[in-house]
Length: 139
Image 1 (cartoon, rainbow, N blue to C red):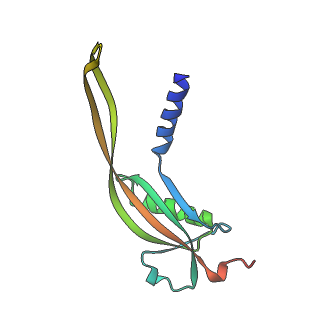
Image 2: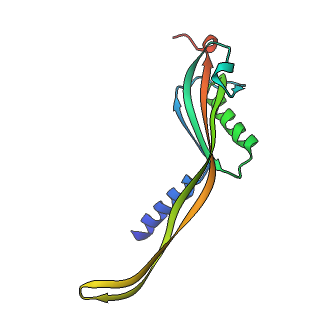
């Protein structure tokens, strides 16, 4: 039973470390191309906001690869355009391990406890996906 719990915990940690895009919004048939914008005011085509996406990756990740990954997701969701809203650096920390040494006593425990916090740096990219009104399928 302990082995199963340990396997589940390790699997969750392993799969949570990958690059993930979190997307909330509508989907349309995939598009072959999406226009890129960095300000909402630059978009001249009448549109609707179809959703919001967030991608968190290592700070070492090449910016071209990050942009390509978001573009591919936008096209898969059927976006005609993507606005890169916010690009920021992040720092996260996680406590790891612990050690115990000591002797049990009738009314207490005497020991030494320790842990280590590991920090990692990353990038967080937020984007808005747009669908041009002329391309919205009629109901």
